[in-house]
Image (cartoon, rainbow, N blue to C red; front, side, top):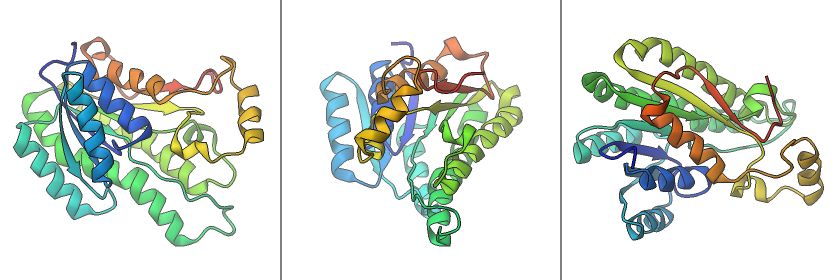
Length: 247
């Protein structure tokens, strides 16, 4: 229970990587605020955490709405008195070749994946500065590191998260607050489940470990970065990709 006494907030916590992060953080002893749009799925996550002896509270949140972010995180801070660990996980895709990409799809992805992380961080940073302890963890992507055809908006948002991570790490490091990113590779989630079998087999050939990753693989990295064991790591991008990208 290495995170006992810590309060964690996870965005996009209703499914996939966010859900796995919430469950693993609770398993490690943290009390978890789970935030996402789907209240029914959030209730399921909270119920699963409770059934395993953990503590959680749900917060319905549209991460693209700045006022909702402010009011929701204010409510979470009022509920728990602090936020020790912030996991900026919420993300979407709106894939299209750049020459055909609509501005609305560009804006939707940038606002959901990147701007929301800036806004959430801004809301909790005061609490972390006050107690001189904090962990900010941004879920980026291998495609923010190498790019991906048809995903100019997604790759840009995830690359932006890496820059945001490093900037925040430099700003708040002197206050014992770390900011790191986790960059998943090919992970089995709802976002990738719609891909064709041929595409999956092609991806597998580029993964030295020979398997597609799981949300739990990513969540384990998040729990580590949230812990005291990672106290001297900041501004780092931790690759969880089975070896797809090295160096």
